[in-house]
Image 1 (tube, rainbow, N blue to C red):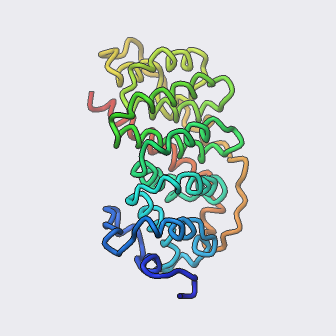
Image 2: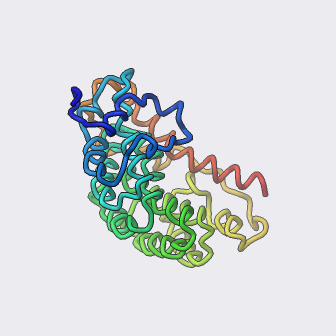
Amino acid sequence: MNQFDYSPPVSQLLTQGDCRHKLDWPNYLTLGLKTEHIPELIRMALDETLHQSPSDSLQVWAPIHAWRALGQLRAADAVVPLCQLFALIDERHDDWVAEDLPLALAMIGPSALPFLANYIADRSHGLWARAAAIKSIKEIGGQHPDTRLECINILSNQLAQFAHDESSFNAFVISRLLDLGAVEAAPMIEQAFTANAVDLTIVGDWEDAQIELGLLQNRRTIRPRFNLFDNIFSPPKNTQTNNPHKPQQQQLPLKRQGKQASRLRKKRNNKRRKR
């Protein structure tokens, strides 16, 4: 046993180190990880002591390696516990959870969809947690083409509740539908735009969406100048954190929000420039 109470081969993930230098995921199964190690990997992924480790330590990266390994193991039993981590995006502004964890859930595959569908429908979860779950559904639809229609239906059904959600959340849903080329969802997308229930600074307007879906060749009107400070830069409801190793993130929640939303905005704008 080591100081963090993990046994080999799971304990090897404690020294894998900085994931910023390992964007191409290593094959964790070569470490000897097997299905029998799934419970211990789940425990590592959720280990608060590891999440709160010093930012310059090796072990602070261990939870990321653990959820990546769970993805490669197609560990369906890990879906529910891993989704608990989405809360860290709103609570501690954890971009690794927002960007990397959905890829692991997509590797686990279609078995994650029922829980993710319920998760995005639950408004007790934070905006950014739900956005990460939406991204997970999109990634599953992309990695598993046979589930594309199911993923579109889940997102479209959620968008049908646009009157009860924030305009930024609705924009996130639409953005992921556009990623999936969801022509099937065009009527629902139009309804949300017509009701002025979409944050245009994230996803553009209805004409932009039609062009991206191949339903319109060119704009019929001049593109509006969107106010980038509407909606998306509003402070999150929960900005408190007890992580002493991330003081900048605690002090700059607006910067984190801008970074998250700007990824989608930049991607949409790049697609428009190519047309």
